[in-house]
Length: 222
Image (cartoon, rainbow, N blue to C red):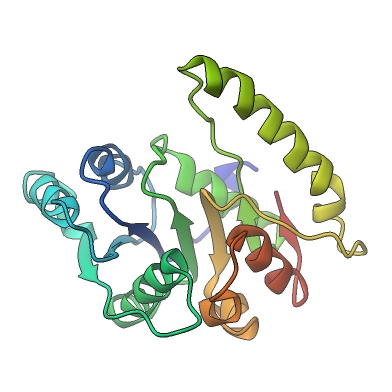
């Protein structure tokens, strides 16, 4: 979708769940701080009881970055029974986002090992706005460095598309639903209608579970 088709850019808050990611979190957070997004853009790092310096690395980066005020670091409380760890961290981040930026129209749910190009948020929002979608997600580029990664990662992508064919996911008349959880943009009101992150609190394949929950109420695109 062309960014020129968007007349008014809605507020977006990115939520990044992270646990013991001190070695890689800087690349993710820097790529979000560097976003060339025309509207208001905030970032919540939800530190899921890291035993390393995940939160400290992110704060230190923000302190020296010209867009550092975009970032807020929060720490998850004790996880209640019935929750999967990542989903509890996402829930923590979403709750913090609602308090800091209640005007946000979209949430960008993204993993701590994803590095974004500078225009990725604008492109996701342009797609959602011009196509009137409740959820837009992208399959991230996976790095194939070792021999095992070169063997397994292409097979993973192939079988994912066999189980969750993108054209059927994108078809409002099809019951097939899914999403690519590494990079997922969702309308805040659509997430509320679906029951919030709590609706998928115990899901192992959380991205597809969330995609299914959102699709029951509105159109999605992968």
